[in-house]
Structures are given as C-alpha cells and as structure tokens.
Amino acid sequence: MDGAGGFSLDRPNAPAVLLLHGVGDTPASLRYLAEALHAEGYAVEVPLLPGHGRTLRDFSAVTADAWYDAAREALRSLLARREWVAIAGLSMGGALSARLAADDALGDAVRAVVLLAPYLVPPAFVRAAARLSRAWGVVMPYVNTQDPRSIQDEVERARALGYGAMTPSALRALVATADAARGALPHITAPTLVVLSRHDNRVAAASAERAFGRIGAADKRMLWRDIGGHILPVDHGRDEVFDATLDWLAMHGGVERRAVPRIRSSRG
Image (cartoon, rainbow, N blue to C red):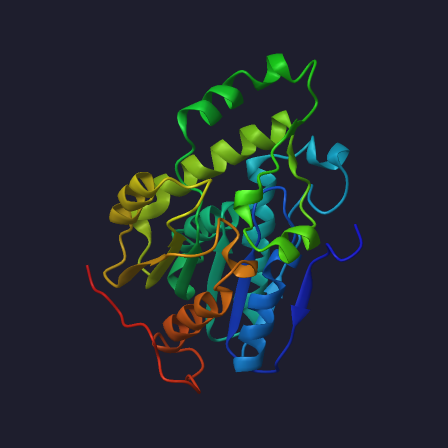
C-alpha cells in the first residue's frame, strides 16, 4: 500500500525512539509523532509489522510470535547502535512495547516507555470471537472493524491507511499479544507513561486502570485525555499527546525540552 511502509528519521548519535503501530494499521498512524520526536532531536525507527500495509491475504497469516519477533529485532538493532533508546507504542503496538520493556535480554536497556491507548485487556466478546474464529473463519475470511469513533478528526479518518478489517488469525494473534503483554506488566522497570482518551472505543477505562496498576515500574504516570479517540497520534489534541511524550522522554535522559514541560513524574 502506498504510504504504508516502515520508515526511519535519522539523527547521527542522537537518542533514539522505536515506535510501534497498532493491529491492522500502518506506520502512517505514527508519522506525526515521529516527526515531532525528530524535530526535537531524536532518531526515530517505525517498522511495518508482519502482515500489515499489504493485503488482507497477508493479514490472514499473521501470528503473535511473528509480531513480537519483528518488534524485538527492531529494538535489538536500535540498542546496538544507540546509547539511549526508548519505546513508544500505539494500541497493539503498546502491548508489544510493554512486553519488550519486560524482556529479560533487552528490557533493562530501555530508558523510558510510552504506551498510547495500549490494548492490554480484550473484552469478553473479542475473546469469544477469537476462541471461535477457526469455525466462523471458514465462511467469513474477514470482518469489518471500521468505527468512526477511533479517529474523531474527519480529515485524518479519511487519510487512514489501516485495513479496517480483522481476519481470524489476526484476531487470535491480537488476543495472544494482549495476554502476553498483560502478564509482562509487573516486570517493567523502565519509567512508563500511559496515555488514554476517555472517549476510547477500544480500551475500557476500568480495565486500563487495572492494567496500569500492574505495571512494576516505580516511576509511572497515567494521563487521561478528554478529546480524541483511540488513535491518539492523529486525532484531535495530538499536539498535547506529543508534548506529554516529549516531556516524559526528556525527564528520563532524552533530549532536553525546548518548551516548558507540562508533565511531571509520578512514583508509585
């Protein structure tokens, strides 16, 4: 798909941030955030995860392991080249980021984590659909998942490059990814910022609060937004999301902010 590929915004010897997109979406959903980070002085890597940005046929053969392996390799490569590395992920990318931050071999080297609307607790109907997906998948190779509430900004909604559909294998992989990430939360030690919208149509507030409570990092903060939907980096109020992200990275060893910080650390 034109415009759906992964991309890098380089700055030699600069602190680096790995950005991970959500399920059925593409790195384009993180382009504005990547550019904000780069303008502030970071090198940025935004890989295209397996099965995404191509066709629904590609999306019908995905696995949770393939997604995690791709994200882990991207992090490993970045850590080999940079002294300071942070991770930020959106939705399912947030779940992958949480799991990476708890990775036995790589997690201790991650300096900061930002989880944007992380998909960590699939609701009961999603779990049921995933459990029965091999049966209904025989007659329904994909289901429409488009929801205008995910991106409230009409202009950005029209520009979105996501599939707007879910395949049986992708649904199973999504639930498995969320479950693995939720189990990893207590093992995260890097400072962690979680940003959510009160109007999120994919992540329930109560489950998000419980998941946040499980994060093991001593320095963690939950920031609620009153505008925007699930895809925070392209929706209304995205500049404030970018500022919060930049503030969090700066206070944990990243690039010093040019603007006055709007966010503070919260321990415990």
